[in-house]
Amino acid sequence: MKFSIINRGDQQSTEMTNLFYQYAKQYQLVEDQDSPDLIISIGGDGTMLEAFHSNQHRLHKVAFLGIHTGHLGFYADWQPNELENLVSLIANEPLKTIEYPLLHVKIKTNDYQEINYLALNEFTVKSTEKTLVMKVKLNHQDFETFRGDGLCISTPSGSTGYNKSLGGALIHPSLESIQVSEMASINNRVYRTIGASLLLPKHHYIDLFPESDQEIRFTLDHLNFTMSNVYSIQGFVADEKILFARYRPFPFWNRVRDAFIGNEHR
Ligand code: NAP
Picture (cartoon, rainbow, N blue to C red):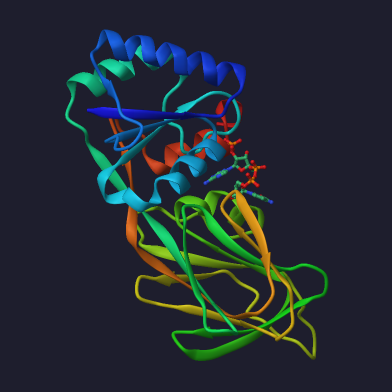
């Protein structure tokens, strides 16, 4: 089992990384930065998002595992005090994985360029200044004209991130789907949007056509960038999936409970 580590860079994560290396030596695990079988993220969700984006060219060959050092750590299953037990499981147990769906985003520009992205959490589309106006199509059929701050397209595992703050539903990652949630849509006698989150299954497409000349701000998980010259933005469930290592069960709803309800409210 070849592993590599990415950590948040704070003191606790660095200490955990050093401790992991000590145990790894003891249990004869091999580090391989270029082609690991297992990527260990030590930090929070931001660290896992970074690990995902820097390894998205080899998703079919690698599994991810999160060790939690402070912060929320929705993707991090293991606590620092479980490190030795974890390393011994990695060394001695066969690697079991579970798959989570991803979002594929395709942006087309007015000069016929096409740019593709994969998101683990979500992709958001916002205007930089004025109200964002976009024609929305579902499966290539006209659906609505959106006016407002923007739209968030999230994966099931990302449904607990930005999407949750927008009032979207929490979706179990066994449902291969993407969710579209509105950000402050304008709804009155003149303008109308659906006003609810939409859940699109596999092989369904959402296409957004911004009014011309709008500068658009995009967020892709923890990254963000602006573009003008955008012709269309398409979102759909990706063919690729992310694999998470599971050395013990940690059901999604327990993860949701631990992250958002906590012990004191049960
Ligand atoms: P950030 O401020 O570093 O992170 C925002 C918070 O979201 C952190 O507590 C992070 O956990 C948590 N988070 C990330 N992915 C999550 C998930 N799948 N489920 C539950 N919580 C999750 O923000 P950033 O670096 O700009 O963006 C990273 C992510 O933060 C985005 O993908 C988005 O989901 C979320 N975000 C949320 C809002 C909002 O709710 N208004 C706004 C911007 C971004 P850790 O502390 O463990 O890293």
